[in-house]
Amino acid sequence: MLKPLVPFVVASVVFLILRGEVLKQFSDETPTLKTEERPLELMNDPFLKLVDNQYVPFDFPKN
Image (cartoon, rainbow, N blue to C red; front, side):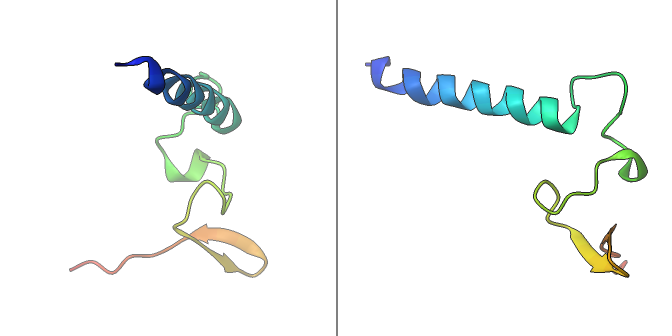
């Protein structure tokens, strides 16, 4: 019953490990909680815009 799910679970775990390594999520060197210290890459953060040839976070209006 669960045998067909095994490839999807393995692929998901591999993806999350690789993504974590790229974003340094599992490292003490670069915390990813603060916006200033996160890598600003459009591929990993869709809430970025290009300003003066640099990616900056969007300013969301406060309601």
